[in-house]
Length: 74
Image (cartoon, rainbow, N blue to C red; front, side, top):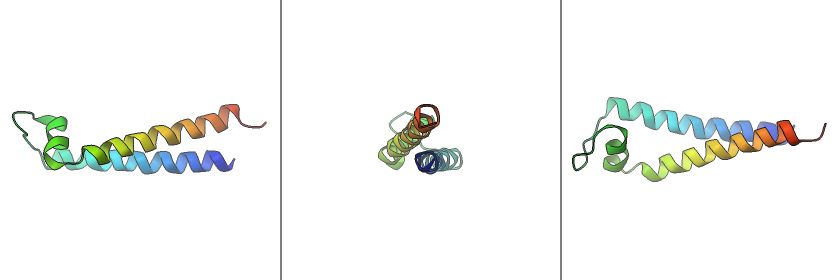
């Protein structure tokens, strides 16, 4: 049960980071060397490493929670 709570909290932290970057990209559009959209925002604002880290956190937390929920002790 503790791994499930940890996994869900890590997932939500990563998800909130991804959601925040996505929302900022809507209100602050960038064009980086002719690349526009979300990719242009990530490249222009320099938030690509943070976005990748948040994605890894979200996926890792989801895997941890799912492993405990489906493979944990019964």
